[in-house]
Image 1 (cartoon, rainbow, N blue to C red):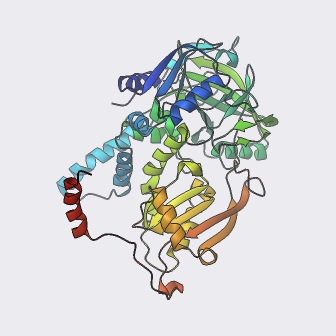
Image 2 (cartoon, helix red, strand yellow):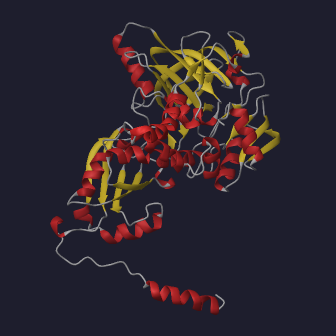
Image 3 (cartoon, rainbow, N blue to C red):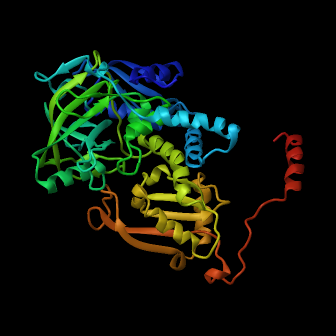
Length: 482
């Protein structure tokens, strides 16, 4: 049964020994970050700070910060099972005969459960505040020493495409400037930024309505970070993940619908053309992203549950909570990649690659130059375009074993022949690129080389022991007491 809200998720974490309550005062200024960082790197539990300094609102952090917690969050063990459900939908064909139609019913049921449902009210409306409110009442973290201020780091930011009216929900950090104003870190390639640019170009409106939900059931929160195609509704995907529609409720001061079970909702607007310096911010690259100009979010109303819980996260030197969230994306979206690139057998984005710096790809090689075709195809797939390095290996290489990939890839390449450089868009957080958002990328063909690719020498076999000897030594090993 899907979690109704954040509180049910917290109870589930606690029941499964995956949450630790912190009953004493801890400062949201740096101290919570340090405790959360130590916990995730030490494979510790999620943390619920019951007495954050300066606020009566508890802080939940590291709720997604392990493979086990991601399984609990998405109610799928393993997370790969979600990929199987997606594959079943992608492979759906018109059924033949009664048996085929009966087998199709569960799949159609999943689709029916995906669409969000509008409700008249919800727990997020228990307290409505259109005046006498301040962001400073909430325990918003200042994460790292050089940060420009406190940042809201786990928001679900809702906006509408001005051309189609379709909803978008993204997760963009928000620097708190004062009681009712924050930055809106819409990176160039994000859909929120595209909505903003279109309205700015039209020049017909002065502001853009935006609402921000904080804290919800885990699948709905998680949907905000998914690399979905433009105009594919994240709330529908959340419904698919949780096998239950997301209840949405209309905001008090604009027409945006937000999850009714949210802990906190910030309703407001972005003034078109208004920019303010935002940052620095200790980012998921493990380095500070530098300060720059970004739009400003003005809060017109805050609604929240009675006794809300503030859900947050931190990013920084890997691995951190975002690695485990990204790893689940890797597993869930593999079927979608294979739909377009069926030769891809598996992919891996190591923690040290922070998602966009390296992707390891195992392929079933079928023709000369196949590895290079895959590289260029990945650079053309949505947010995969940011992949700064792509290493392609043969299907017998386990890309989840980074040590094996490094060993075989380094042995298999002739650098001048097998490394290719291209220019294109890069992630906004890439501090090494020659220009913001634009730079070079590298593809490495670490597959076995064929004579059709100009390699005329014999290609050696990997050293392995014969199965008969291994079986014999298994017995000798036991006999020796080893």
